[in-house]
Length: 37
Image 1 (cartoon, one colour):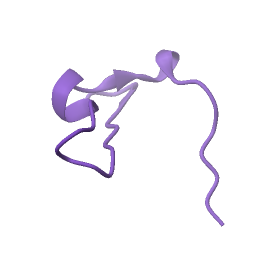
Image 2 (spheres, rainbow, N blue to C red):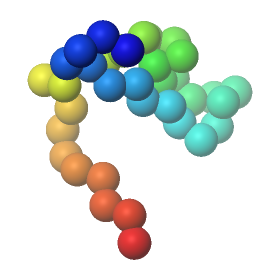
Image 3 (spheres, rainbow, N blue to C red):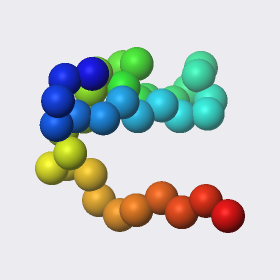
């Protein structure tokens, strides 16, 4: 993954359109924040 990018991957590999489809995503395109409890 290039510097300044992230790899996004959904939990449904057959139906998710994620980095496996689009490639690495630039940080500047991210919106929101993930929280895990």
